[in-house]
Image 1 (cartoon, rainbow, N blue to C red):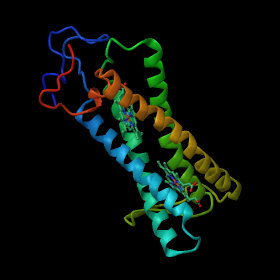
Image 2 (cartoon, rainbow, N blue to C red):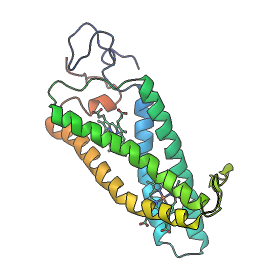
Image 3 (tube, rainbow, N blue to C red):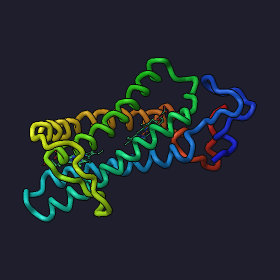
Image 4 (cartoon, protein in one colour):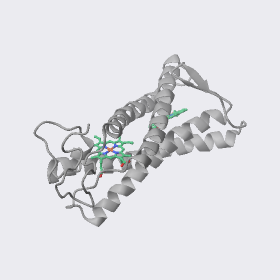
Length: 204
Ligand code: HEM
Ligand code: HEM
């Protein structure tokens, strides 16, 4: 997606950008971002549904099976995007942003990486430390990679159940921040995570 405003030409740009510096997140980073955002809604809905389904029923089993599989997909995507990000730095932020605003955004992003890795790992540890393999959509299973430890298993599910509240907090801050920039301030912060659209050019 090396469109005219994905790559900076000779025009001066916000931040420390210079010629040839990307101004939006690239297509891979954007695709994974929106895919994970969609999967996050699905995994949380499945988690709630499984949590409120009666124990020892087929419905709860099916919901947990899907919940775990989607959760492991998110884990794989988060690891992939962290590695991708290490090789593809984020585009510069608009010059209108203050240092505190930038610092808070970075903290929120770190929080998102942290919580979206911790949650599936805690979910896996809960099953593995109880001696159970975790199926991935029935395609293959991840065996328990540690000895049985019921205490660890219970700690892991406690972290999983409590961790959801940190997740809601960080997601609300992040989505709120994104919408604040996109709808109220109307600067280019949100635009950087959206594909190039005709007529929607980034400010010089
Ligand atoms: C990003 C990934 C994940 C997120 C955001 C997530 C989130 C949640 C949420 C919100 C609940 C509902 C809690 C409640 O009812 O109060 C839940 C339940 C649960 N999750 Fe996850 N989860 C993820 C991945 C996983 C994975 C990978 C596993 C297992 C391998 C797992 C195992 C469980 C179990 C067993 C429950 C049911 C607990 C119960 O009510 O008995 N989760 N999860
Ligand atoms: C409607 C929902 C969402 C909106 C509007 C949104 C918007 C954005 C925007 C505009 C950025 C770029 C911000 C910047 O670089 O300053 C961004 C980055 C990011 N978003 Fe979201 N986001 C949403 C949902 C999510 C969800 C659910 C996750 C869960 C993991 C997430 C994870 C991230 C991460 C980790 C980054 C930083 C990317 C990086 O630089 O490595 N976002 N988001």
